[in-house]
Image (cartoon, rainbow, N blue to C red; front, side, top):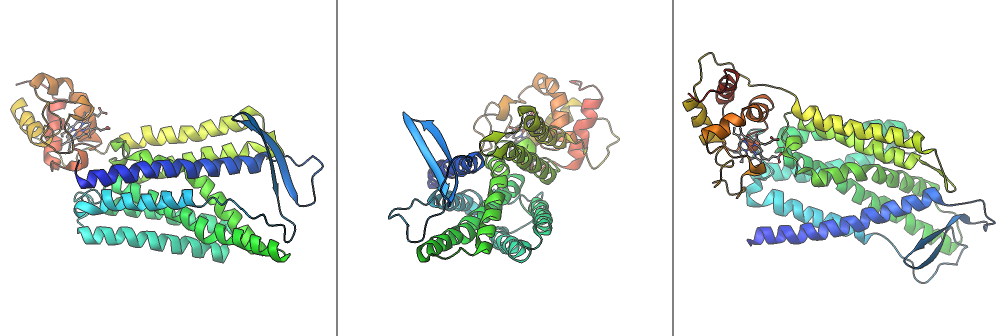
Length: 401
Ligand code: HEC
């Protein structure tokens, strides 16, 4: 195994493990917060209690503030799950997207960037993204959170559009994911942790905690909660070239993110606090509707017909069609592909014989003429004229003569 692939496996494996621990924790604490019961005889500082059963016994959990000076010797923090997820994620970004001349981050058919320019853009957008988001919420977060919300969502969508103009499809998706992950990590380490530290300091000294820190921490933690589903989609998005390679790939991503965050919203909205829940239909129906938004995004937007940019008037015979397919498709779609990335033909689509090409004509039209998702990243440099010629051959009956 080459060194690059070895690092890829190690970081990816660790990334998934740390990510599951982080998101799992975060979901559990969110669930706890929404299910605490307050109607029992609780102490003045208690914020609610609940019982759980797991692994052979009961857990008696209470959320509360502590009396001054009551700080236990050992306090469990939950920060390294997030810390490791981010560190391994950034390492993966370097190994997969920056190394090897940033070959995976760049796509000459999208933008003609040098490797150094592409990597600089990627790093700079992470820094600027965090700074802009953090500044927005520090300035408007307390006085006008609605404005801060609108502006941060607009900035994020603008960034996604920008990434899609600069980077390869998979690169643009992953860059968005790393930006979101970086914002979430900044929230944990630069907002939520300091707030918890100040809570501890306040408890030790018997003073009130600064309410601004507490509000800020709560806001950022809600942001992280909403960002989990979109981020998890991005983590798996590279398996779906129909999405990352769609001409409107940025819009697909925005719609899927909106739908994913919407599902998350109604899963939160379900809980009324104190262990009470809304009726199933009340939250399940809108949650499904948001799921429908995701499906529409993936189904409709990835198949938008753009068609070839040029028209050809001359007839196209099979010999010409075969010439195009051999040059532009067979490097991957063959029983013995020559493209190093695909040792076996993707999706078992093979164009080794006239009959195979003829049988696949409708899919060829959809993938290479209408939506132009093929050739993959246009690695074989098909031209617009060739796309149009394939269309003419298929429209005139896909005849083998
Ligand atoms: C660099 C490699 C590469 C080249 C060149 C390439 N493809 Fe593909 N092709 C892929 C990959 C990867 C997939 C799998 C995509 C997925 O999983 O959605 C695929 C899938 C397909 C599919 C099946 C998708 C479906 O949903 O039916 C068709 C059809 C297809 N390619 C047609 C073509 C045509 C036509 C050409 C030439 C114009 C071409 N491909 C060139 C890599 C390539």
